[in-house]
Amino acid sequence: MSTFNVINPANEQVLAQLDEDSAASVQEKFELVRKGQKAWAAIPVAERIDCIRRFDLLLSEELDKLAQILSEEVGKPLQQAKNELNGARGRISFFIQHSEKWLQDEWLVTEGSTQERISYEPLGIIANISAWNYPYLVGVNVFIPALIGGNAVLYKPSEYSSLTGLAIRDLLYRSGVPENVFQVVLGGGGVGSYLLDLPLNGYYFTGSNKTGKLIAQRVAEKLVPCQLELGGKDPLYVTDEVADIRQVAAAALEGVIYNNGQSCCAVERIYVQEKVYDQFLTAFLEQVKELKVGDPLVEGTDIGPLTRKEQLAFILDQVQDAQNKGANLLYGGFRIQQPGYYMMPAVLGEVNHSMRVMQEESFGPVIGIQKVESDQEAVELMKDTSYGLTAAVYTSNKERAEQILRQMNTGTVYWNCCDRVSANLPWSGRKDSGLGSTLSFSGIRAFVQPKSWHLRG
Ligand code: NAD
Image (cartoon, rainbow, N blue to C red; front, top):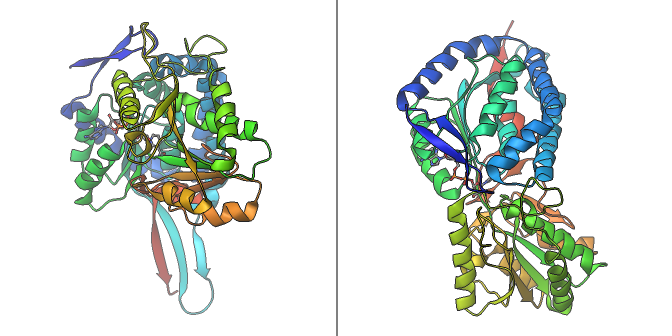
């Protein structure tokens, strides 16, 4: 069996060496869950939810240890790792509270000669091919409702968050989820593609647009559900009607920089109305300078290393491209010369849409800030993207905000907030940002199929 190394991005040391799955071992895992899924589906939903309740309890009891593993393997500051675990627990609690309601039979006609009802049946065995940036959050969006819905899951964590994937597996087993219902598949993209060779009943992918499209093509011929949660190039617009520009700058900065910008819904482009542009820029730069870049395990660190080494060169290239085309590098934008994948966050002014930094997903600590004359210009620029995940506007004028947000072709819109996900609301990308929804009632129903009953007694 071949192995792969888990590297700590904060010091480039090997954290662990893990066995990589092969086509044969993935096939074995598939055969195992094929045997277990029917028995799992046959137990009452409430019992499956009880397992998830125990899982949630274990997450809370072992939070510090799990946060440390996560922080070491992906480089996020320890406090942010804890926040992620708590955020995941919030989502789990949504599923615990609401799943029974959305999975129970619905009677549409109960009188007359023909009665009609809908029941919701599991899909069977699903693949959960996942990303590393928020392994708990994007993981629980899929494997929790899939398990509650009576499915078996072949879970492939990203090769960059495999230790977390293994920790999740162990906690699920200790919570009562049988081994023949949940299996972890470890390795990189090649291992992921073994899952595409299997006759699974659904594919749920979180990751890049490039891989997502490839997966959708491979899955198309199977005619089974294929959901994709992909990237974004999310805009934020600051109008000239804001009460406290410093506060708006702080919120925008957090949207850019939280998790080192490695968030699908990170703020990736900022447009500012010309009347408040200078004030905004001053407040933004003052605050970016206060951020501490350093060891993610040290308290008070705001920004750790990037998770993947290759991303450093990619982001620095975007910065260089912008500068070549006339942008002004106002802060940072260079690799910190020490072990680990650290860079100073980059703030670019005088940007425009000919620059890659305003078009391609950056997925890192870099932001372009562009001046606009009017709402109309802002709307046109915000819409000038192949992505469609989120869009935000800051203004004290609600009508103005709604007028702007109605024009956005994105799955999510924000008024006076950004970079936010709620378990109550469907999480879905449009265009290049994905297909289908997780979370909310639609994220419960995404893992079951309706059966329509026409009953004449
Ligand atoms: P990625 O596409 O490189 O990898 C995602 C997963 O796919 C990994 O598990 C990887 O091993 C696997 N994979 C790669 N090639 C494969 C193949 N040929 N067949 C099967 N599996 C394959 O993405 P990433 O770097 O892990 O994640 C970052 C991206 O994810 C960003 O674009 C980000 O915006 C996006 N993302 C989106 C959301 C969302 O909710 N919309 C959430 C988190 C991350």
